[in-house]
Picture (cartoon, rainbow, N blue to C red):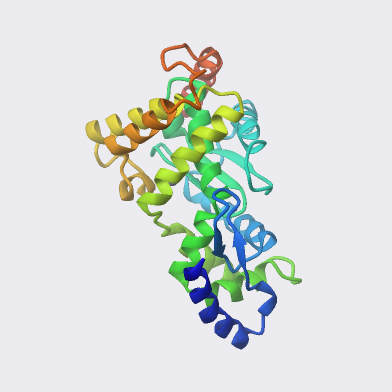
Amino acid sequence: MTRCHDVRKQVLLACFFLAMPALVGCSANPVTGRRELILVSRDQEIAMGREAAPKFEQEFGGRVPNETLQRYVRSVGAKIAATSDWPVPHEYTLVASDVPNAFALPGGPVFITAGLVRRMTNERQLAAVLAHETAHVAARHSVKQMQKQMGAQLLVEIAGRIGGAEKGGAAADIAKIVATMGTLKYSRDYEYQADAVGIRYAARAGYNPWGMVELLTVLKNLAEREPGTFGEMFQTHPVSLKRVRQAEQILRSGAYARWSPTKRDPGEARFMRMRRLLEKMLKK
Ligand SMILES: [Zn+2]
């Protein structure tokens, strides 16, 4: 709270110059409930994510051109999105890159690569990835990180133009947003939080949350076996044994007692059908 007040003083000063006092305010984080200072509104956050999404899609090989696969990823994503603490228009897209990766943009767009789907073995693992990314969105991690990296003033200024009355931001503004989003590095704390909240979302959506431990184990083994295969996001924050252990600890804490780590995933056959379809498509 006190820290929030200190920042608030600085920002009030910044906003005096920008003449945008309406944007200033400590607000409760949708996930943690903690008061914190976020300078862009929900609508501006959504607008920034929307403007940046096509560039990211392109950068990761474009959408996988198969409606059955896209619908499948969207349907798992929609179940997760329905449990989120942050009401934004979530969108889940399968992109063609073979580099195992997943990422979320502010305000809702989530991408998962074909390279990651090909390395998973059931639907609850897919749900776990999407839940982890949805948790980043809900906890407003990217906006907070952008605020830090770009500087509060610049972010507020650009967000105001993109999310403001003018339809569609100027190309230069979008380029700045895209460049910053491309270099976002989440802190270790954000990663642990996204795992923990992801477990909550996956379970609320009816998925066995042990999928998170399975997923983290797949990623950890992959990083050990094939170092250098990973997308930047996993490289900067490698999946450590500590992350696997933390997820295990949460799942054994009592709140998730009804879920068994050994019970077979009922969505496994469906997932494997989709994975085979994806592999067939990629061979073409
Ligand atoms: Zn993450």
